[in-house]
Amino acid sequence: MQMPEDMNGLGVSPGRTAGPVYSMGGPPVLPDAVPEPGADEAARASEALAYVSSSLDELAGSVSGEAAEVLATQAMMAADPTLADAVAAKVAGGRPAAWAITDAIGEQQEQFRSLGGYFAERAADLADLRDRAVAWLLDVPMPGLPHPGVPFVLSADDLSPADTALLDSSVLAIVTRRGGPTSHTAILARSRGLPAVVSCPGILEVPDGTPVSVDGTTGVVAPVTPTEAAEIQVSGAAEREQAAAFTGPGRTSDGHAVPLLLNVGGAADVTPDPEGVGLFRTEFLFLGRTAAPPVAEQETAYRAVFEAVGEGRKVVLRTLDAGADKPLPFLGLAAEENPALGVRGLRTARVRPQVLSEQLEAVARAANATGVDAWVMAPMVATAAEAAEFASLVYKAGLQTAGVMIEVPAAALHARQILASVDFVSIGTNDLSQYTMAADRMNGELADLLDPWQPAVLQLVATVADAGRDLNKPVGICGEAAGDPLLALVFAGMGITTLSMSAPSVPAVRAALATHTLADCQRLADLALNAADASSARKAVTGR
Amino acid sequence: MPAREVVVGSRIGLHGRPAAIVVKTAQAQSVTVRISVPEKPPVDARSIIAVLSLGAHGGDTVTIEADGEGADAALDAMAEVLAKDLDADA
Image (cartoon, each protein chain N blue to C red):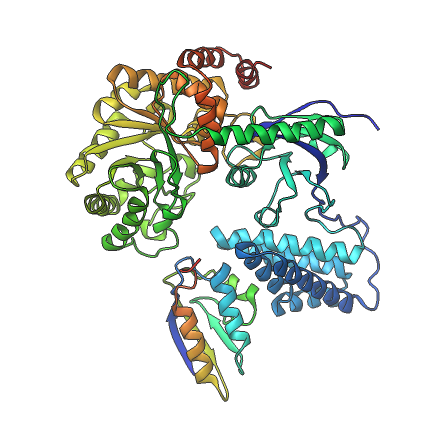
């Protein structure tokens, strides 16, 4: 057996560890040649579905919370009479059990997909059912999480929400072949504090049981000896402990303050540790609604978050970020060929100005009632005129601090003009990458282009930081990149004033800042900006 | 046949937890309850796949119908769960 070489992926959740790799069981594949159906295909098909239903129920019983609910609902689907009838019809049409189930589920998936949104996502639950039933019928291993009985590094093509719900404490780290910095795997890993590398092409060729080291910061996955693996586990855990030992406000070792803020979607995400909230996403209030939520209801929801943050502390609230890709029926937006470039973010106020004015009214009331330092920013702004108009609406609502997100390259290039008419800006690195690199965030095949270390994207960030320094106005970052401890140093070196991230990323970023001077950060920023490409930028900064 | 119109109270619509609760409630009834949305044929409310296929969002109006002894009680029970925000405690 040939030993694999070092592999490079995208580090999306910081931390180092090591252990044997075990891969997620892949889906069973139906043989090309369809066999003659036996006499008992109908019975075998119902037996397979009954087995899947009872095994999922059993799994549901072994976990708790949301994971248990997801699995119980999936068990319900496997036992569903509508599905049973559809499968029986296929068997009656001459298809063997495994093929009958595959066909019937395929048709049902089409129906779910045509409904869009959350309903379309249920198509993945059906695919999982089908794979389990087909594996049972073909007598091949079940797809799903491995259970090697030792702590291990999980490898997979990509992870589904159901897979991630079942991850237990024996998983040391996650490495996937696909996925990008904003993939489900990345978000889950960060929320659990598990080191993770995505977009790592060679990982599925590594035989089960091979010990590897995983560095969720640099993205390097390397084969190691079992002794080395044990050492890395210990030193990685020590590093995490050490990171957790740094407390207090974000600052470099020579005392340059870089406040660390949180990205939240509701009061439950607010933790007391960081210095406020740098991105409060308000979409949760609007999703699945047939009419815009009334001002009083919005006020109550904003108050809940503001109270959790606490009087006098800072909250940066982002106004409604919807569009044809995140449709809200009451906005009445037309379907678009290219929704990422369509009427979304602040642009929805062109067609429904009242939704924005009511939201600002509710924010102002909640801010007055709670005494938080409320900053309000609009998403998807492209011009200084849009920024100025938004700021005037914010002030008119009685709020003091107005800003905009910098997500569109045009806005980054015109940061000086934009900053002249607002109080602050915050850079959304995820969308800024998507628009700068012309690469869809949801397309896992383009993850290399969406690497936040792309020097062109970093150049735009630096342009905005320079404008902020010249005009003496705050320039924050609230994209996923702010939670990468190395990029955080690069951003601090560029002169970015605040970094906002999900709570689990805070300790590692705080520790990185605390162990570097501002001059170190400036040197690292120069190295990254002058690199030829993303991987050399990362290598230059990590010193590898 | 006794029938009622109910506005879906679950903000997220009939999927996830709300759909599961609606289906379990239907399964507990002594008569078959059918549920429909405008422009789609009524489906058996005991089937999670059929209920999901309605694609009903929060605030949509659905029609429930049942026949035979206990139909009214079954419709009462169904109307109650459908009108609630079943995801509120999530």
